[in-house]
Length: 185
Image (cartoon, rainbow, N blue to C red; front, side, top):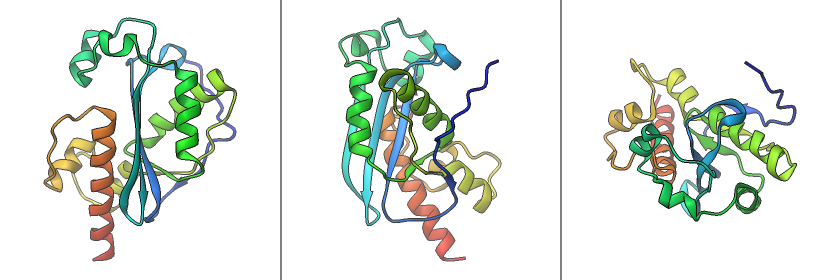
């Protein structure tokens, strides 16, 4: 297995902040160089409230596996006419700017975004990040800390889990709930 050095990758932060952008991607389920992003979504948060969102499917130029179709609900027809990754990354990075990226298991998403940014638009992905998985492991005592476990723990509605925009919204809700728990310690 080849390990990629991500020299300009942002720092992993362990904090609560009121301004950030929640990011989530869906992929074709493959790893390393075969892995392709099929959906990118983001919700810009200002003063702890949603301010704007970005969401698009991406054409992977290959058939999706039955597993990915079942997990995400994304079909080959949905992505076949979608925009190209390079075009999407440029638009996405303009939307994101220098914001802190918030995500659940955020290193997975950021590593894909970093590698794709270098490969398709020859730019790094240097944004700092906050991981709700890392926060949950530090501040909660749950047997498992998957996003759906945290959503259940905080009693949020789980419909459409594993679509990027919905996962962004749920991650934001979980982060805000963890913030309240932390402030009440």
